[in-house]
Length: 488
Image (cartoon, rainbow, N blue to C red; front, side, top):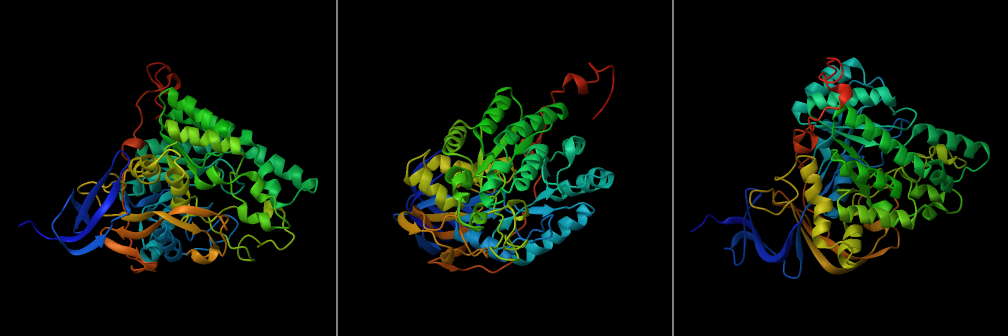
């Protein structure tokens, strides 16, 4: 007789990034050990009849318990944010260890790791935000931290206190190439945003809706193009975060068409919201403020098309929760201008339900693409695959049972983050994650949290295939063509 399974998820409709089929899933020691029909009984069983059994979601872009450059801290702790993630069907998150100018990167990573070890319900790994590319950061700390499992860097091309400038960006790209780390970038033109913001405020256009105008749509495509040019010079793979415009998608499509290693994500808000959502009385529109801002319905269509073609590979939440009070969005008071209001939206819990409704229930792109964009592709790009992102023999038993017919009207009171509101209040969606397993352990069942804070595991990882350079030198960097100069 075969050794008994610890658990069998029985009779569900299994969905992956390539297939959909009826099967039982057998779990042993936290991993998937069998997939088939009529599997032997397990020590425990979960009835999945009438349910879809999908891989746990991976949210590769979430700001959790993070200190901002303005001194504000996100509304969520690791416990609250990852509880929300679990209820939304996400079993792995990639938040940020955020360095600010003057901070020691080694200490920053240690501090965020301690917060996650204490509170995280789901599994996690980190992106390291680099805002102070000193010699010590570039030549000592990054080379030391990447082998410890911190294999992605994030860089900002805008924000007064965070943008690193063109030379700093080139230095970071080179440091990442040497360490075999992937570089993720917030790509918007800082000068355009700063110039527009100042003019709007000077002329009295200060309401939250003008935030959308202060980020000219051309600022995204220009910065993406400049970033791609830099990355091609260094021969360094890049991930472009939160693409929001049709022009941004087109710029990425052209670069990928030339064979460059350019990856890109968008976020659920850019597929569902538009700039019009910020047009609310008083400061109410601040609840919909994020950067880049939501754009137009035409941009939504362009992004969906880019996802269908593979120009964009990932949909994240960019969860950045700031409460609508003096500790968050209203920290500058009731008369704040849009320039004084924290940017960011809560979204880690509703990302998957919103996308399931759009992609599966409403038939846009379908179930396999939903799994690919929210689980399998992020696992592969961030080198968590095959352990994460798939339902396959040997993978972690991160499984979510979805009721595809359940209709839910979203409301802040039903969610588990600490923001106090949701920008999707009153939206009715079809399809809901009911039961959530992480490494075979039940996280959520019948609306109740079953796991303890700190039970999530750190996932150390190398850069992997996505971070490997193409080894195709440009003429400027090739000693055979640049008079023998060795610049790497």
